Length: 313
Image (cartoon, rainbow, N blue to C red; front, side, top):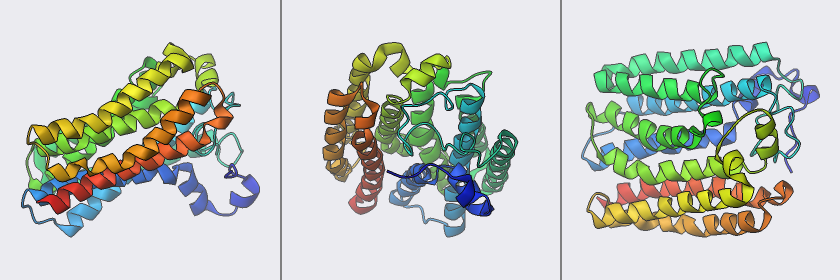
């Protein structure tokens, strides 16, 4: 089991400390999401610009990192991370940087603000190729990332977290990456990213199972809290099943190539996660394999969508 952050190890390693605070393993989701948008532009006959593509990927990662750090600060302020004794690190319970004494609240707040500022700066540069459509999309994505954790709004606490996360990774990031290359709005990134949106929503859902007791005490009314662990299994199952059915539907409708069905190769990982969740939903210590399998399934799913697009046309 990975060790939680230790101030002794990280006290003299500031760059590593800042990196760990962003929860770097999960940042791969942003790279995959942006990659879907680059793939849809490519298959439409657009010649990808390496500079704009690189800046797009960096901007997606900094936005996700900012949201992660902001979420850590919010969950420390509301007490959910401190009270989370059932967490399954590194999958749930935050980065533990504040709770382990590695970073202060002030340092965490400054890091979040710095990452948001960096994201805005990159976004402004990307307006050169992306124009007004990217501006509108970028403002919406930034506000959604902030509102996910902001105490005044707290989308996650209101049962809107899954929608926000799914929309962010499956619609906003692919669409934004496509706009930067294409220079205009197109519907293909929405079709290509819809299944990935559902997969990221299911990832958030399963990650909430170990944290449900602490989240309930902190007033975070996400769907696992609202439904309870037993009934919430059905919400996870429905979301995950939809993620695999949606590409098939779009293939039938002619909106995606048959090669998009390659995402079915990620299904065995989701089946492993589903089996463990069904049997061990009430015992967080037995959910580690399910959590790891869901992360792997989500990343593989996104990569297979990209591959299916690139090699189909």
